[in-house]
Length: 390
Image 1: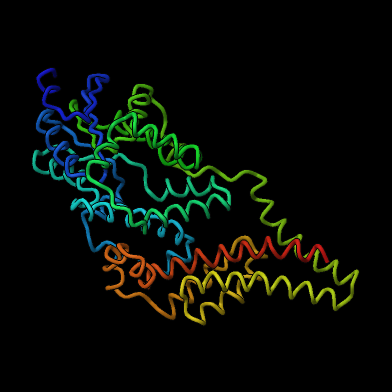
Image 2: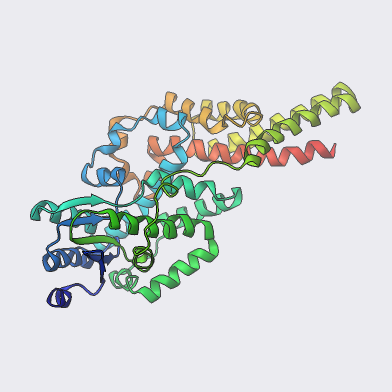
């Protein structure tokens, strides 16, 4: 392996493990040099297997440019997946913006790995955890205000105007700088780093352990390499990392305590202050909850009937934890302005500008769901102390 090692790219790390030679190529996800690094590593190692940091859905979205046209937006809303789909779109937008600046297709180094597998006859392995599981594990462990903060950071990153130079992207491949970047992320969002980075380091490493072949080239983001090297020698089960943790017992109870408390407060108002006081409490609940949910829908530039549906639904759905006002308003918006095939196909271009982002009917439906739910949540916590104070 010494001759091969001399021709490996600088971002490659070689691990000898149980009769396997694993070459882990750390890349920047938007980098022309990373594409060449992958090809150089494959030429040097001549692998039996090429593993890439993608899951099946992300791989399909890269190789099938029309994959969005098969999305059923009604099912996305009904199944409560709007927030996760919107998060995926935001991340794709960020990478597309970088790729456009550097004239490199986002995910080009992963596609290079897949093409090398096809050209050389090597087996292609997709070793990343499914994106929906990762996002749900991240989201589930965030509090409400951390979710709002995260959305703000993502939007800022997506529409920021600062130009990023190619040299800056390549500099991120240096482990000391990258570890510093991850450290800063961990300070701001420790739960995100744990689920998005640390868990996937372990997952990627264990999938490599299970990959067939004696000579393997793995193409992963450079940020994962240090963690993967630490985790790859200790076998462990992937069952826990592939599943959503069951909700704690208290989490099944407290969502019902809020509506029970609201109903109790309103009933107490009738009991102590008579019909007038009770009606005032109901008016506060409906007005505050409905108005803020409607404001959220309006901020998403929803149709007037959608805004009205958010106002009507929020006071009722807030009393039932199994429902969400955003689901109602999202379905109404999808019914009034159903997206066409062209709308789905134009998603990549729509993600490049703020104007395109807010005008695309698909994205607007997702925004309606998310912003209506945020407004309803704020309305719930604003109305309760007001009613209690009376």
